[in-house]
Amino acid sequence: MKHSIRTQFTYIFIGMMAATVAVCWLLNGLFLEKYYRKEKQKNLLEVYHSINNAIEEELWRTEEYSNVTLMNLCTKYSIAGIVIDIRTQEVLAFGADEKQSHRQLWDNLILADRKREDYLVETEFYRMTIAKDKITKTDYMELGGILENGDVFLLRTALESVRESVAIANRFLAYMGIIASVISSIIIGILTKKYTEPIRELTQISKSMAELDFQVKYRGKTKNEIGVLGHNFNHMSEELEKTISKLKTLNMELTKDIENKEKLEEMRTEFLAGISHELKTPIALIQGYAEGLRDNISEDIEERQFYCDVIIDEASKMNGMVKKLIVLNHMEYEKNTFKIERIHLSELLYNYLENCKMLLEQSQIVLEHTVPQNIYVWGDEFKIEEVIDNYFSNAVHHVKQEQQGNKIIRIQLQDLGENIRVTVFNTGDLIPEELKDRVWEKFYKIDKARTREYGGTGIGLSIVKAILDSAGQKYGIENEEEGVTFWFELEKA
Image 1 (cartoon, rainbow, N blue to C red):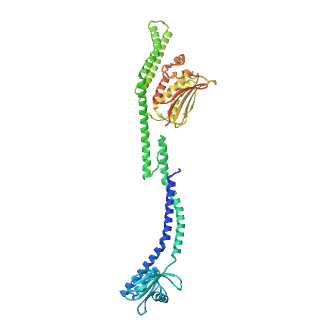
Image 2: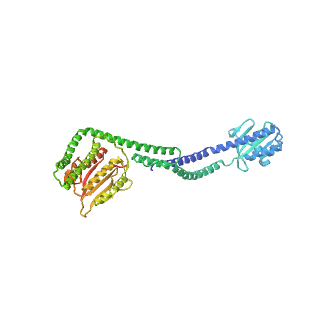
Image 3: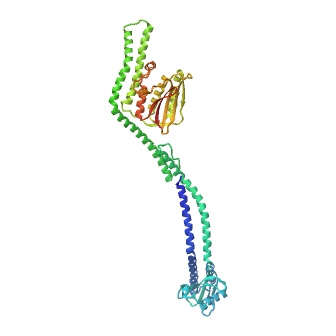
């Protein structure tokens, strides 16, 4: 991603580390020398107070103090010194050559020519200053004065080149900072990848949910906040799918109620007129042949059997028509509840065609189909199967041989992006353009003689129209080069 959290975190950590190194480098340059000198002052005063207390308490004569306590302090802080009494007799000498200590003591106390502003610390007993040794040309921090018993003392410690030490420390800090930044960048990159991968996964899940795809689930196993968020995403996805399914159902019901209220009277009138017309012929045939049997018009057994067969056939056709009318009436007039759910359309078609194999073999029909696997749609499974059954039955009844001598029915699923189109093609006569809209009307038959031959009622396509209109889906007819295609669309899930 262009603005990924991983990249931002890496830049932030590297920036913070670089800033930290830069601040340390600046503080070293500004304050390290002063801090170093302050520490030297504290060291000199610590040794001074130790000697002063030891002489006052007569401990300085003991071997433990002179060889252990004082020696440890001087070694620890690199301090040399001398103490002489008022008779210029040496009381203590430590950390350096005694002659050098004597010489430096007299230089400071007698021959030194220092101004008051040169002193770092000044009290009634001692003074602290920085001096350069005349022989070694080395800078020293010196503390000299009089102890409480009147003895004269001098303590000195060499001042190393602080500025050079600061420069070396800063160079070392810069090198280590660069190395640490590179190593930290690698570690941060690895760690941020571990923690940002679940976030990237959640981003993809949210994108899928925004496109109403609720099949993608969070697979992480962590129990931290990201893991809890991922499991909440899964729960939200399931609830949204259920809610959308319910909303689609309610929307279909609302749309149907509105349309039914506007068209109820018109449809009732049309229904009564159509049923009266369709029942008139079979009733007349049944009545005529029944009267003939009653009046013994023919005594021939075969002819009487023919009369009975006609009556039974017409009654069977009326029964089939009544059943279809009941379905159509239920669709158009009654409060019909659609159970909108996610349907495996590929599996539904495979199962349906498997059940039709024997019928196709008996009718010598060649079935061609292009049905991809794992195609899902939103809809009512029972009613979608009813639409497919009516389309397929219509194709079986009207199929004719093509030029190569085969009767062909072809079923296809076409992916249109948001929708799936189901097409049912059969070789045979084309439908005139001016009659395409009328085939959806109840009881309408283009070829009444042929329809009568196979027992058609003219209601099947009306049932299709009622189902798809109620579902708010598109449907239609297209004339092909050697036959006719009926199609309908469903929303892809």
